[in-house]
Image 1 (cartoon, one colour):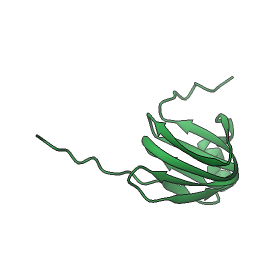
Image 2 (cartoon, rainbow, N blue to C red):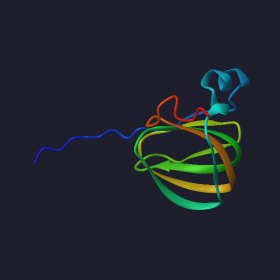
Image 3 (tube, helix red, strand yellow):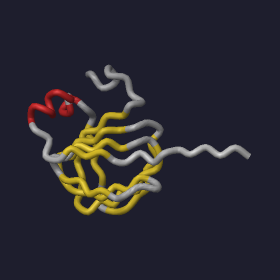
Image 4 (cartoon, rainbow, N blue to C red):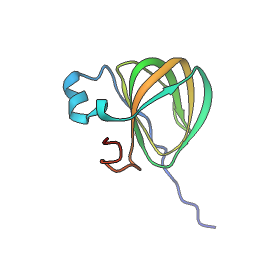
Length: 106
C-alpha cells in the first residue's frame, strides 16, 4: 500500500491588523459571523481568513498547534478540521477561498 504524507498546515496570524492592511484585504466588506462561548469542531472545505472584531478563541487545526486569537487579529485557517474553543463571544469577518470575490457584494 502506497502511503502519502500530507503536511499539516499551521494557522497564520497577523496580530493587531493595521487600518491600512484591513483596507488592503477589504475585511469590512466580508460577511460577519458570531461564535458563542464553548467548544466545537469545524470542518472547512477550503482555507478561510477571519478578522476578529471582538472576543477571543483558541484554534487548533487537526494535528497542529493551538493558537489564541483576539479582537484585531487576522487568522488564516487551512482547510480541514479545526477545534474552536471560544473563551469570549466572538464577532468576526470571514472570507473562504471557496467563495468567489463577488459572492458577498450586495
